[in-house]
Length: 226
Picture 1: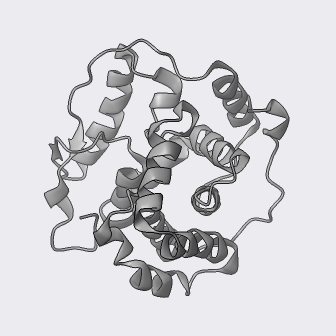
Picture 2 (picture 1 turned 60 degrees about the horizontal axis):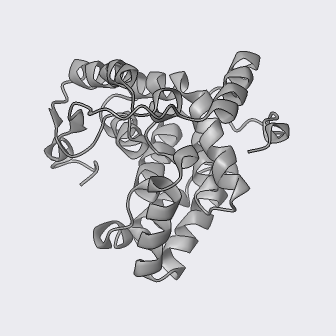
């Protein structure tokens, strides 16, 4: 990634209410999740929800939604894996950028685990807690304050992910732009951190990680992630 592209976005700030921020997070969690049959079946519901958002966040979300609606499911699945699972600079695991699969990442994951536990969320074995769709779901439906704090702490990573997706023309880039609109813009220090992460890339020490996964039953009976 060219560091020349690590410039401040020029879009004007978008004024969002707390409810609108949570709705953006909820929709983004669904759009960034694996395009399963169940997720794709919610397209009409998601489109209806997005229609009430301000244009600056509505349109990027609807562009991704149109991609999901108009692309064959097998191609969606293959592209999702290629985009997020096979490219080290486009991982949806937020701590991966700074720590890779090193032992230090385990400590970073504890930050998420403690936040979930503080909100009464028990962890299971299905997903690491730094997975962006999981964090977005948590912020949207469980603990908006704690979730927004974690998102805010990872603004450099979110911006780096947006840049990486934009560089490849991914339809998911707009979803990251919408998420960014719900958070404070990157500071000068954030910009330096983005440049460092882009230049260095994730560390490559391979180790095992504890199963810090979010219990999928957490959101049963709510509008949370299934």
